[in-house]
Length: 297
Ligand code: SF4
Image (cartoon, rainbow, N blue to C red):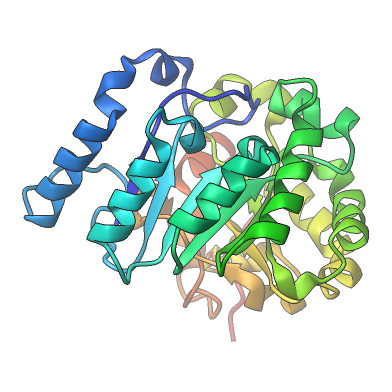
């Protein structure tokens, strides 16, 4: 199932957001419940193209934004998607702030019947680190409270904490992991995903301040290995396997569609290629492929 932009407005202004400002300025009506229902019904009848990303994937659905929890008819929308796709795993991508409202989280837990996951982005271990990335003072406190509420009130929903790695977040990676281990010590209760940022939307516009090469991020991720080992479920998205330490390669997942990735000539004959992302296309355009280290038998 595809990525579905549930709502185009957001209450954060993240420096590495993959949307452009214009997206939020679009008329919200086209993301209203009526339009969402029309789109999904057309998609289910095979009347594509309806969705742009991952439209060929049949086994999951991602509700994205903007910030989907700000949708004016959020609960009705979630209930509709759940009813029409009863067995399909749904992941809601959120900045987590709305879940700081306990009544909201209680209602969400009742409506979002499993299989349902909430993936929440955390940008650092403190307000001083997180808030400038999110672009909103006070967002760290709300996101952390949102996570606490979800852990306390969920009814079978899974929680994923996403750490997007870019120039403004990478230096605090180990501190962020320590923060998670101290604040949410039962690591079997959630999954952590470290994601090398995508060069798209605002992250492309802000590339001077957020741009980060794999050689830097993979070194920092490698240095965090003793901490990473303490989490029950830790994954790496958007990393070529040759960039990370061998111990971390089993954690790499390919989650981007084929059209967003490339295997340059260096990948030919590499024995790590099976299950490897290759390079993100925009990364390849921006930085080239000189960092690749193919492993040949
Ligand atoms: S050289 Fe290419 S195929 Fe091999 S690990 Fe690196 S990116 Fe993957």
